[in-house]
Length: 314
Image (cartoon, rainbow, N blue to C red):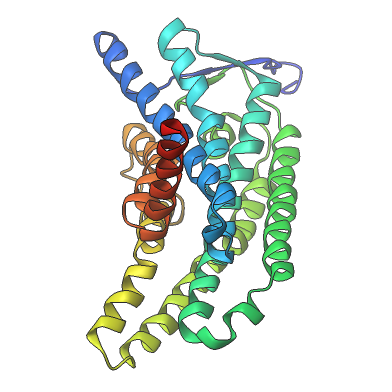
């Protein structure tokens, strides 16, 4: 009888951001600007890395993949958010919701794995500088990126298939601005224990282990830096890793605070704000962190502008 009384949900409703109706337009402009900065800034990074031969190194190979991942990661959630704010149509089809959840998990996991690869690259560059070109070969770099894509594809597919087997009751309102996995599980009226178990196990493998690997890499880096006799060498080594550490603190700080250290006092508003931090703010800040704080990127941009100026003068 219970299954007969269940309503098959074909459409979900996203509540969106917890803002007043009169504030919709200012926030729409704000998020549109942030999205454009994210896309254009990360495209500029990819463009510079492809064009400038000085940036054809393992570090910037990983960075170009990270920038591509950031563009896609933002594009999974922000366009739908902007559409909801502009048209007031908060509906999303069942299939579209699962698709959004799949790509959200895919690019979030991909970013985590790419950050591990970048941490390993910095570890080898600082701790084994004489063997750097041998260890970080093109074959190894390509293998790390391909492995990251394959692992994230299977992980996202696993959670999506497990979610597709659940039944959803008449309550189809998602208190979020995208189809968050935890929010969908709360709407399910069938047994979610398998999903929760897989989230717990795979969450440790996909998030905790990469985070620990990054911490170990930087612990070795700090240990190696402290053995450098000159203050100039210490400053140079820390500046090399500074941009990467900034991204790590932004990404893992919000994700761990939201998913690994949940609090019963967390309101839907607080969780939404924290989600905005790692889905909107972090991808937007990457171009500034890797451009304004990176001499190689600024040099590549300067050379590109100089070439354009010369060709324009001619």
